[in-house]
Image (spheres, rainbow, N blue to C red):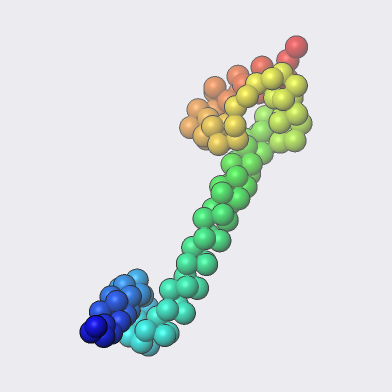
Length: 116
């Protein structure tokens, strides 16, 4: 039986990692070991960033809502509580979009929650 050396697979794996490390600084895009480290770290940061993005956007929506509500003389927390009490199910993303783009409609929503 003939011996098969793993050179082809190794080269393929190395090329794949080096392609992923394209644009990295100094030896991180040339040497396989350094590129491997850099790609693994980049993957970790990317994963964490995807989780962080969700938090950051929620914070942004809450800040926008609070700013729009302060102009109307309300607080964010009391507004959210009144929304839940009235069983109005609109999420923060949509509410903040309405508050920024259509302030008149947002004002009507606020009136609906505070009245009655």
